[in-house]
Amino acid sequence: MKQLVILSGKGGTGKTTVAAALAHLASQEMSVVLVDADVDAANLELVLDPTKQEEHQFMGGQLAVIDPEKCTSCGTCAEVCRFDAVITGDEAYSVEALACEGCASCFYRCPEEAIRMEEQQDGQWFRSNTRFGPLFHAHLFAGQENSGKLVTLVKQQARLRAKTGADLVLVDGPPGIGCPVISACSGMDLALHVTEPTVSGVHDLQRILGVTEHFRVPSLVVINKADLSPARCSEISAFCAQRGVELLSHIPYDSVVTEAMVRGLPVTAYTDGAVAGALGKMWVRIRDQLFT
Amino acid sequence: MITTVASGKGGTGKTTVAVSLALSLVENGQRRSASHPLFLDCDVEAPNAALFLTPTIQQRREVGYMIPEVDLEACTYCGRCAEVCQYHAIAVVGEKVLVFPELCHGCGSCTLNCPTQAIHEILKVTGTIERGWAGSIEFAQGTLNVGEPMPVPIIRRLKQWAIPPKPGDRPVILDASPGTACPVVESMLGADFVLMVTEPTPFGLHDLRLAVEVARDELGLPVGVVINRDGVGDTGVESFCAREDLPILMRIPLDRRIAEAYSEGKTLVEVYPEYRKRFESLFAAVRQLAATTNGRGGQ
Image 1 (cartoon, chains in turn cyan, purple):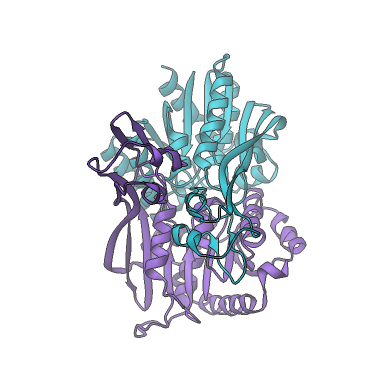
Image 2 (cartoon, one colour; image 1 turned 120 degrees about the vertical axis):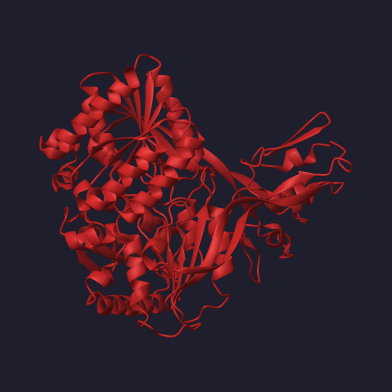
């Protein structure tokens, strides 16, 4: 069983478009388990038409709650809180749930024992069926932390499933370089970086390649919307060569990508034009790298 | 007047809008003053605004969070630190105390609760914050070091350092990261208004809905929408805004010239100077909405 993660650094470069196409293409040749690791803005489900089979609570962290009956507004909690989560006022204090990191510092210091720690549901995760294979995905509740933990959890579930006989675990990663990205990277056999030929794309590609190098995950690069700037494409190409990372292919900009998204389809299942052709060649190269 | 530019989905044009807005609020060649726009790039995982504003950086600081260091002379190995730590970032094993910096949130609880005051804290550097000027725009940005997991402490320090305690009327523009999780919340806390930049596609709509949930429903902030690449997808975003009573404050059409300029680090107002007027009006509308909408009470 091999594991592939799609990353980008910069958001909106086309990770999910590429992931959906790979899910479609790979599933014609092998057994695939899919993971959407972008747990705060999960979009893979929009083009895979999943049917939910299981739904679970994700208990991520805890939250401080102040009992207004016992609170004397002494100010100790606000003093010890480093996350500015205590809302002070003339009357009893309260806690801004989105700012609280659940450290319990206030709980231990409150002289009135007016604070309790409550376990908090930070999200949900699902196992669904799609026409390309089972999908493990999640929904982190608005503004919650612990996205890294939730990513680790859905990946574990997908791996358990894959051990019963799948060939490929395909992970659609989150943007950025922080905790959910690190969780998405860990233990992967290969990372595919989807970039775009813009100054931001180049800048963020350098940062995300730093992350995969740091965690020793081999990388491949693909340039999406490649015809936007030949100059930036050459820059990426030179940069990849210098870094010893293979640049797989160039996907042209084409409105069929958005048309496919509007119809809820992977672009390779919607059309067989230049975009689908480039994605097809890319898949063959990835397959060879993973399985030979 | 603090405005956070957010989106949910990545790549919808947050930086394009935030940068063009800041540029539209100053005259070329104007002298610098404390009433000029202040721009903060809060996307510390992928900070890109500097590529467009090309600021001259004047100050730079290493930041991060405080992690415990144990003085073994004073430590009695009682285990209280490990007991109070909610992140399993400190453990006492026999006559050894182990600290796991990557799990620590820097809350200071172990230090406060140590009965023999054997713990002091040292800075674990996880990024940098910088500030300077881009013409007459005051500029600040944070950068998370590669390999570090936690962006929030960098954003928090950046805001504390760069935003004056009472910004008053001064336009303060925060460029947030994509998504809807904790770094986005940190970029919205303290804002007077959240400007959502979206694209009219199913992905744009799906993530816009989640971002509005955070800004308006959870944080109680007034929200307005900019539709970028207008005409590209479907009408889902329009219907959503109408249904949710979200004002659409600007539309930027799908235009290859804008995309090509972006790829070279050029801003929208450089390609189409006539957009300056539109961004000025956008900001006037934002001011008005921020003043009249009491987000938390109004919903």
